[in-house]
Length: 257
Image (cartoon, rainbow, N blue to C red; front, side):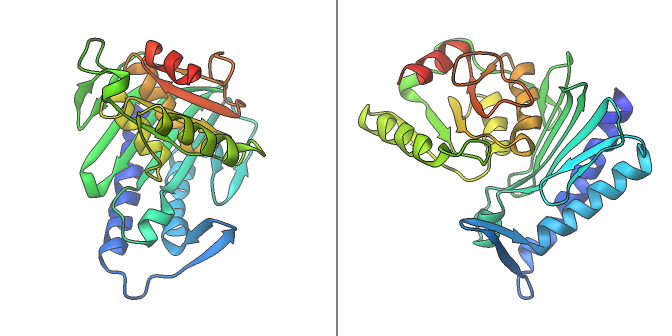
């Protein structure tokens, strides 16, 4: 397990630092629309190339699933799930909330999760059964009154797995707003899940959650003492098309909004 974690951290750091250099030197930066409301940039492809090349060199027999390149299926029990630049729109429009997200799955279960946010110097890591960390400091979702539903900021976004994801997300935001709760779409699901795992956000709500956006964050939440469920309250699975994450009692409150 240690070898997997070390390789993941090394690749996340290398890709993240390359992204940071691009972010700070934007004169020749290019991007395009891959679909309505979705942007892809040269930065996405650069970071993806760094990560995929590193995985192929270290674990040539493993499967790879990346946001931009799709699936490389080698019929392995191990699958790397990559979002080389989660928060591309933020990145392009000079908002700091973006990150590199890498997860390793074994037979459909996350065993390694790494999220690196260079602009905040936040490096989240989790190993199955080994706890969650930010910058090598153990993190947990607060179990006491330090984290209260009505005094927390809650995150939400939407993904592509569910056709009605956008109106569901919009309706959730409306219900939270009219109920007097603080709710924001910050633009980077992986980093938002990282912040839920550290107690900085109260919860995360994602209809249509894309696997590459949440795989690393799911492990962080579990290892930090939280729960991740679908819209029916069942445990989140790799093929789930809905995700609600946070402390168990807060997740239940979110489901009841």
